[in-house]
Length: 452
Ligand SMILES: Cc1ncc(COP(=O)(O)O)c(C=O)c1O
Image (cartoon, rainbow, N blue to C red; front, side):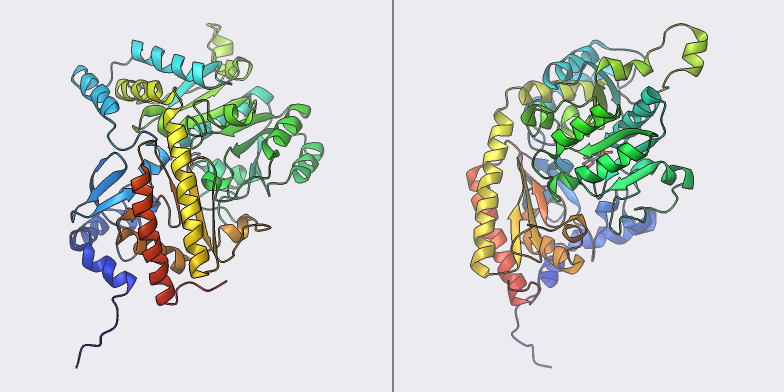
């Protein structure tokens, strides 16, 4: 049969450019559920791209393709991939061993840096990840108040543990995962981000220990918060004696050296940190006011220590390698220069991407705060769209967009969103905008996006 002269589809281009990734995927599928070694986000159709290395704002896959990266280690790499000072810190620490079963001085420096930068961080406890940080913060809040329930907002992401699965994905009345005990479900109140709803629950339910909020709005700002929402949460939680936990796993050190709390002037009781905290190694922390962190104190009184305090452990918490890279990263982060560049580059990218969307007259819009950007396919504005709408973009459209930009040398954090680093340059942004232009055009040509 004669070859037709039609253009290669986005999917065909993706498959053509990634033969080695395609070859590896069945091996991943043999070993790992759904072919993912560690994260549901690594599952992709027809296969995920396997990455070989990263440097600065770029990364390279196993087929040698180069990407300008807007995933940046799930937003952990504000300083870019393999920042020389972070690598040097790790190399220096490596020969001395990874665990001594006790404190090391580098932990002290690390804690001091967090204390200096993050306004609410009177006391700090390091943990193994962001999810562990939110899990511990919730336990501290329950212990401090003697109450059982927490309030969380529709669609806000705080990790994958049981307490934060209710309300994480639409439909919000069905937990994001099976396997969550009914007792846990009963202890979590999921609300739309609405201060009147919060006030109603706080007034009618005397068993609320804490309100936990993603400082950016759900999923690093995919569902933005109303202006002054955080201030409203602060006011109401204070009035009702409820602990305010600000989840700064994304915003911490990114929105400003002191996180969203410093940038927006919020005074939480506890906050959770991870990602940039460690310079990109595993780890996290709960930081907060001494009054709240006090439930972790051991007094030496055997009755108190056995029956009246929060227990906490974790083999790799505050481990020397993460302390070394965390110190190197926070030293740089403290100047604010990386955040200033990342924000400025993100602004340039959002503006350029918005112009492309306008030029092709597609039903899409671009938004985002600080060093993030989001593209929403389905409407020319997100005005009036709630979490349900913003989290319900067509999976086919999102997948096509990610693949269309990948084949043009750009990668994202999730399918239509990304984060920047302080080492992205104007040339990177302009090159990326050319890729976004080609991607949107390809989607228009394939009829994968509607006009609006
Ligand atoms: C706001 C927020 N909280 C908590 C977490 C969980 O952190 P980790 O993946 O380190 O467990 C994440 C992860 O992306 C996050 O974005």
